[in-house]
Image (cartoon, rainbow, N blue to C red; front, side, top):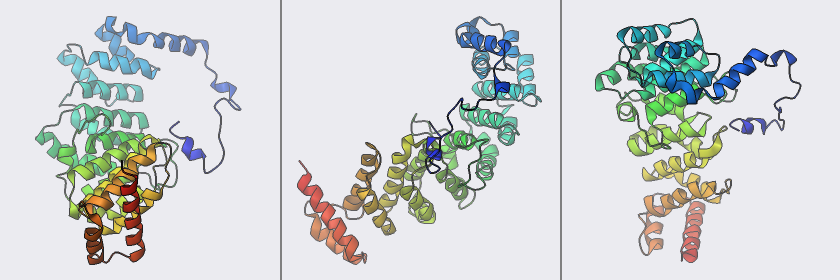
Length: 352
């Protein structure tokens, strides 16, 4: 589902199961393991701490997930915590993943520096679990001072080398996507995580560089978070510095997981219009004429019209003279001026 849009330009789908490799057929042991994993969630509360530690290295990720969560609810001894921290450097990536998850849920301060370093682990799922674990911490100012710049630079350095070339080891950049939610916030669940610290980072680098990377994420969900961060926390000078990148997010939808693609465009045009960047007027007009997909077009057309009618024009009961004067004062091209006037007239006629 997340990657179907990648296949559209190729006009080609590779259906799961087609030309299946017999060597990849599950043997009886793995089938039995999968069946047992299906009920592990119901049994995990009865497991002892040693049994849960064993499960952290399990073949099945469902088992590892519930074992890590369960351990985080138990009263662990100092030895237990030491063993968990040691798993962070295990040669077994399953153990490293599980230890990240459990220690993150425990908000273990001792483990935090190691987990931040694991954002560069050789295993993509360890990197993902490290990013997820960091999001479980409630950072103090001292922790933010120690780790924020490192995380921003890691976010920048771990971007796709070429956004137009798919890395099939992480095709939607899920590792950076998870870290993005921690650094910039997640507007879907309302969590801000480190956003109030991130906004204080040095400009232009690393803050602007990290935002530019965030605006190019292929997944609409974390991209939406970066745009929401920008609209709610940045100002005019920031919008001017980032304008080319913001404009691209208005023009082009995210290529993967497009569920929040319309929200990305809406946040971008809302920020541009709120900052009264006149170069954005043609972008807003384009959005008004864009049909979008399903009900999504209404998501970005509304702020586009609002930007034209309110933010650039301080809409009044008799808007035409006011808009005309301001448009001429700004040197608005006549073709754009007439388009806006016609749109405003149509909107007033269609209003109930």
